[in-house]
Structure formats: C-alpha cells, structure tokens
Image 1 (tube, rainbow, N blue to C red):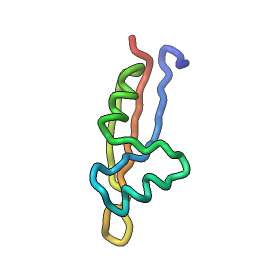
Image 2: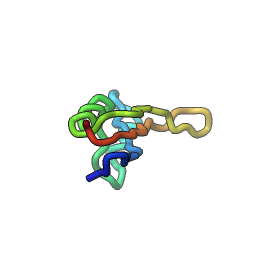
Image 3: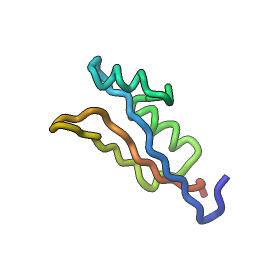
Image 4: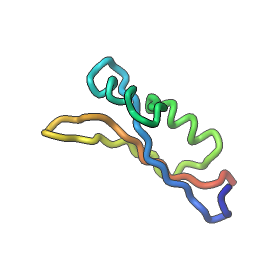
Amino acid sequence: MLTEDGHIHTLDLVLPARTSIPRLLARMDRGEFPRPLEDWKQIFSASLETEIFDPYPVTGLGATLWEMVHFKGRRKQ
C-alpha cells in the first residue's frame, strides 16, 4: 500500500546459479528465501513499476562472496 508518490526500496539476497560456497551460504541465510535474480525480477514487476533493479556483488578479501539486488518501485499506474 503506497501513496501515489510513494516508493518501496528493498535489498535482497540473490541465489547463485551454480553450486558453490556462496550458494551454500545463501541457503543457510536466516531469511530462508534467497532466489535467482530472474525470480526477483518477476516478483517485483508483478505488482510494482520498476524504477531501479540493480544487482551488485558483495565482496571480501578480493572475491565476490555473494550477490544482492537493490529494487526501487512504485505503484503501477
């Protein structure tokens, strides 16, 4: 439920496509709902107008540990 000019922002964990340590870590996440990037895109766009859909890596020690996605959306007009 957003006002006419309201927006929602969310940061969500992206489930890596291939079997790896990052995928295992994503499966162990407390949220229990990591999803592939395309699934997040479908979920968000089903009920919201996308303004930002920006996947980005989370790195440490020079390596990508996992990927997140930043979404900003508003009510569909």
